[in-house]
Image (cartoon, rainbow, N blue to C red; front, side):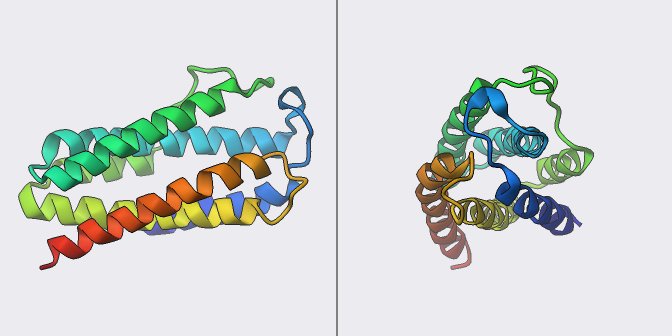
Length: 171
């Protein structure tokens, strides 16, 4: 169910990214605004999941990974908060019911079961996010091109780290 919801978000974002062609922060179009709202929601959800992982896991690698994600998502949220347009007022963001359900589900898990479920989900989520950013980099005139270009290597590093941690859990 969670993968389906993520794929719906990605598909929507894939169609929204190519149509974002405004040239300044103050001229965000409706597609940009929709994407930013969805990105904020996803970032908030991932931040909350990372906070859960940092306190629930006993694995030092997972705790370090979660703390890295918290730093990254705080940074991304700060960048999104810099965007100004009607409809993007800060403080009106919330986590979707699907993401809340995911977070509630992982909170119930303990030990190795938690670690495996969290890392598998984070790997899937991060690979999905990378697809969105790669799509945004296809059009150099896109408003979000430079942000996507700068963020994609960071996302790839998160994927590589998640894969390494997940493979070590399976041993």
